[in-house]
Length: 476
Image (cartoon, rainbow, N blue to C red; front, side, top):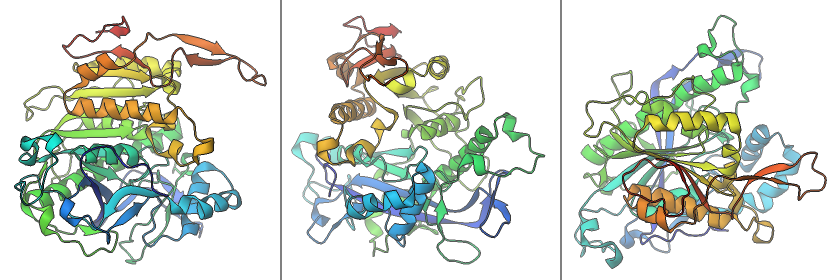
């Protein structure tokens, strides 16, 4: 089963890269108990992994190409995936096995492996560009986006978003964080050189020595999440630095491919991606917290990785609890032409109805003057991912498609500087909450937003253009 292909003019390629970290680095002080009963560091950075989604060269997309598997299959038995998702969800492996064997293992992402990227500096005669994109698109490097996933996610979990952006002329580096937030990953051990299974780490199973200050948190679970954010920041710096060197100078260093493909490295060089400026950070949930944390420290502390020249942020349903309060607040970087990053925050209905959390979010977002905060009516926390589309059509939520279409449209228009025009055309409404007693077994009414799935509530509009044509904007 192949997920619905993106609607953009370009075919999409996907290549998964790994970067060994030598020597390995221990981040934080949290520990985990091994199967032998020993206490080992919970966050040991031995390898960075990310999947690049990119516009693919038409001349290399042929019958011999194959699709990217949604479940990671490289050196990863299906049983290990079942074990990892069982650890994350708390559902018995016995119950998960039929779903994974009969359905989950067959899902593929509409992105082709073993294809070269479309070099935008080639002439149309060498690699034609669709007429709808215009001749100018064949000359400029593709914009770069770095995507950070949420708890239980991975490099393919948001493939509908990532392939949509790639098919529209962007390059997306989707991280597979090795911080114990993915259900399963297979890093190669520095000590043994062997692949080992790293399962999801429940925060309540983390071991502390008792002498730590818990990163300023009284809740040990949030203290561990704070250390995971530090780990993620390091991964993103290293991934960006390695990819930039490859694209700009052709220097591969220790960068490898995960998929055992005989990759032609030459098309990856030559400055075909805009890495030196205008980078976009994008993340969902815990990945949204990661983006906010990065924005308070755009320059890494270590000297062996590159500064990330961020100019835009797309933050999806951010989870703020792992971030110290008050804040976060932006750090003004004198190296950037723009003193503030343009920021788009898209919230689900469920996170907007989380009153205390949403109150804090509305206090945080205005710290970025050019920022917009939108809620998509009917959206759930998982609506930003592929999860709603993994179920068979007869039982799939019919609202999933219009909701993800609005999310994709908002994200792409924000990147293309057409957000005001798109917002004007959306069906907007004010924030109104109703009590729903439609389920007769409910102990108390469920709170919902008034409106149809895909309607937009504009809580903050941080741009000059006036879009308040229905009186639906709360603040300006």
